[in-house]
Amino acid sequence: MKFFTEEHLELADAIIARYPKPRSAMIPLLHLAQEQAGWITDDAMAEIAELVGTSSAEVLGTCSFYEMFKRSPVGKYVINICTTMSCALLGAGELMEHAERRLGVRAGGTTEDGMFTIEGAECQAACTEAPCLQVNYRHRYRVTSDQFDSMIEELASTNHDVPDHGVLSRIRQHIPEDRFVGAVPPEDVVSSPAWMHDEKVD
Ligand code: FES
Image 1: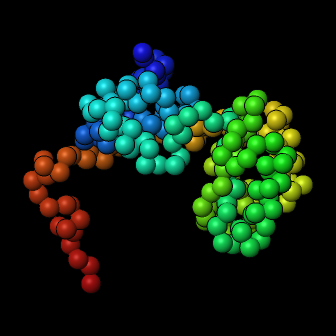
Image 2 (image 1 turned 60 degrees about the vertical axis):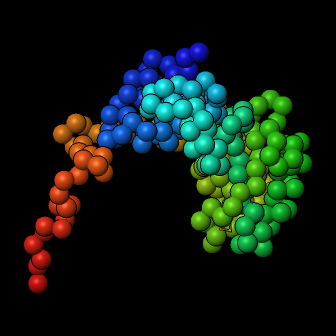
């Protein structure tokens, strides 16, 4: 069964054309699939395999390596609460317990209405702003229980700018053909890189 919409299929072809080898486009195509469905379906992996000329098993191998790719349905909003050291010392455990009580699901679970998934996560590189979390990979800093509740209310309304799970960016990258870097497969490289020929300036 076909997975990608016509629009996304066109985009997939454009993405593949940027790489010297189609297989190199596998991860961007997985992101595109997750943007379309919110998670990575078997049909998506089969179609990506076909597009880049590999097997579904290899796409699964790549997909399952990265935690960001979800292999089963998740909520419209995935809330990752950081549980690593700085956040743990500043209340991440209590924040997680509060989130579980507020949403009525345990970490790793999704609310019945399909709106929220909560997960524990490793350091989100915002340790000075502990405890912190991400909603669909958008940071929220120094989150108190009250702020968590307000955030849930905000997300349940239409009064926010967090896109659905899977949408990484609202602005699609467009590289005109004359700006392509011109990468070639390693086996086709016949000379040393241009930077090696640069004249040295004393
Ligand atoms: S420990 Fe939580 S962001 Fe680093």
